[in-house]
Length: 329
Picture 1 (cartoon, rainbow, N blue to C red):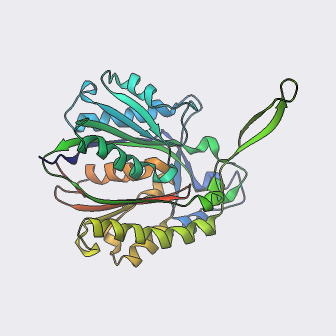
Picture 2: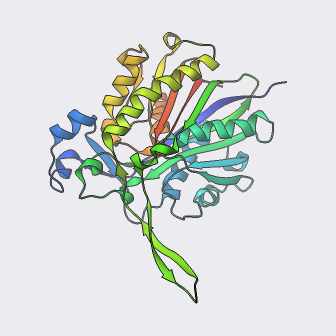
Picture 3: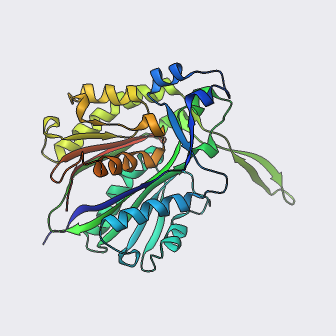
């Protein structure tokens, strides 16, 4: 019998501190009108210095596990999609420990704003092969720690948050199709680069010692990339699912910029009322943005069992991907 995948539960967590556009205008030369008209963002959540990425991810994970009617001991695998781990070696194992998921293996997956979609596809393979039955997928990022707060081109865009889903083995497959892409030739358009300085050791041996720079982004290039590539990848995922865009109930894109969401929906001929968006309240939360919107829409009763969703992540790498899901167990 073919093993399928269903989303059994979802959850989200955001820091309590909010930073709105008016407050930002006191830091850099900008305004609420300038930010909101160009991005759709009005405020974003900012993690306190003592708030760990693992604690944010754990809180989202706990809510998803509870909605699924499971306990942490039922989880077989934890995939943490993040680019801002507290530890360069990864934070997934910290999430496993904080959850008390003693049976779960855990690892980080880094694909920036595409991380949740890439994580969804990766986790689904473990379920489809029969290796694991209950997988916790978390998308979490604390980008406020990697933003140059003197650069008004980037500091207005990003926020912090976490979202999670429990993926479960099912006799009916709810992951209907997917497509993933990468183009490393455009890596310089959006990155958090490592800058090193040579440090001589002994004789002719020299090592590199340095640090990571703040987020660097070419906004125009990323916009052009997104509005071209995202509709294409959604259409490819729809083709694999043997569906067309008119069958979709919801379009759920990475929350980067409202202009991108509008342009992608227009190219796919999807009406505005089918486009889920909450970036006005949270900004760009990278790998967290898709599960944050998903959890909000589910808990508000917008997404109903049987609804068809197209989700798509896109960003640094450059990477982009899409998946077609049917909501429900």
